[in-house]
Length: 432
Image (cartoon, rainbow, N blue to C red):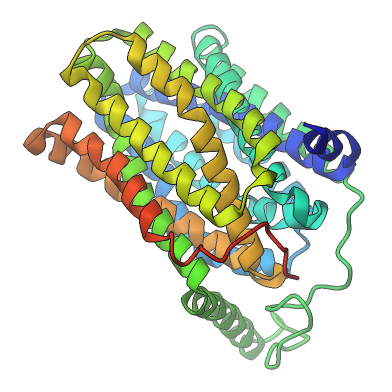
């Protein structure tokens, strides 16, 4: 707890970063819940609701990896501020939505917001190691995970309430305010880059990039070639590093499971547990509460363990608990085991997320982190999209429980598969 207190209370820049994330994500969750509700009210179509999810995932798949190239070129702090302001402005068209014929506006805004987020997410992940010391990196990532769980709990509740009271306009205004508040918090960070960041590696300008890029067609082609070259450099780095390669495979496999979980968990509660909408809400709220409690515990103890074994143990434990959640209805249809498992899974979930983020950050130099985290986002978006789209068909063929068990098996199998590459990983040392 002493280390956690020192990190949060004494590190002003990191504290402002976490608060900015917490505030903006509260608004995001509120709008996400409210939009899903609003789209269904306007259209009465589950297909329309599915298209809303796809409109957010497709830009993540297509743009995530390339966005990381620009994050490595730019000042991360300024990138995060600018993106927050752009996200706030991008929500304004939603105020024009009045009927089912306007639902395309919602899809367009969701896609645009997702595209902007592809620049923010890797910038945030890449800046954390620059704000904290190596011995507090895992703790910092655990606190970030806890902030995300807290924002999900608070934002989802606020979104449900506002969707029925203030309508879409109220949700939009709330999210705009949170983005502006996040930008103000980030503007107060005192950290600045050590030197001018050149294109590509972040250390110096690359040959072939004209100083007058954009003035002529030739310079434009050269600049495009430089971006492609830097993107390829990030791919080559991932291929060369055994640790990064293993972690990317883990992210790909488990994101498939997360897509399945996102599509089938509500049907699982309704069909297998015979629960109501209220039951589903209780379980989701319990999951968020377990994540908050687990995040606090993870932030307090994670630094005491070797990071590689910690990650493997957390991933396997997470998968085992999920398997217990999906299989226990074979013995009883009682609700309390689901609530208990959702509380217990918070600790391995928080430890796994914190360790995974720290392993990526520690395995990659600062000048390449944007590209790696951009690739992670693209891989996860692809996996979730494939998992979500295939889950319904597979469930009709195999049944809901067997398909959901795949999600649990994915974490167990992927965790064991990366055990050997991560054996040598200890407490993180942050390369620059």
